[in-house]
Length: 308
Image 1 (cartoon, rainbow, N blue to C red):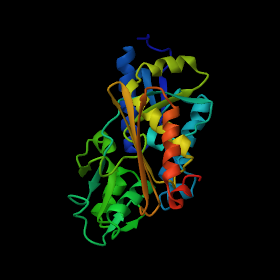
Image 2: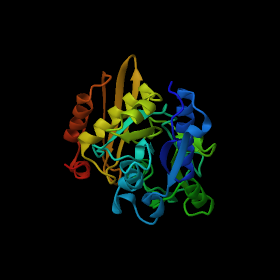
Image 3: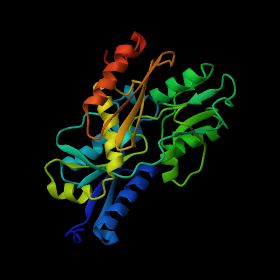
């Protein structure tokens, strides 16, 4: 526990309702961990490029960097002390001047289906909205009859599109809905839809040379979440994928070891390879080995979207 800082600790965050809710969670955790007053932490919201460009797939306009670049500028220039990120949206390889030093306890990793009682209940040939290559491939594999249409925007925007009839159904992360206090949708088991790497995790990033900020933020790290998400991100790094690469992965801490499951898909969902490894916490080589094994087993339709 630290004394109240001389000035407020500034958290940079995207301005979307979900991002603000997650930043409030980080603020509350910091205040509780350090015994600070409420005004010891302030939020600095910015409208990210990814929230402005909604008519094209993310991969076509700059990839995941569109979620982080404005926050990176503020953090790099000292306008903020830390950035709050949905780890699912953070590029696998980050600039060396930044360091993710803490993650909050992970929420529900599952997807929720909006607009239908089950995947089988979606009407034959209906429009299904998503912008995520993983969800697109998974749904095309399960329901090749569906017409996949582009869905971009925050949670509220996508829910409104379903209400307006732009598509019959969509998938949203359960974690985001829970953090917004929404009970919409039906949770889909991970055995049916393995989630995106890092789904449900909130990370806090600081400057690599800011030891004071690192000490402040590291106090709220949920170790199990960090260990599992870092394993998933090590897998991603080894796959050399990008925003166009349909990949699902989930790590769990079981019996003191990490169990990492992963699946790679062709863009149309027609081909899929899966694998699993169990290894010690902190072992970054085994996720790389799993990635290599998956790519070795994958047909060309998959390898060509994973740098192979």
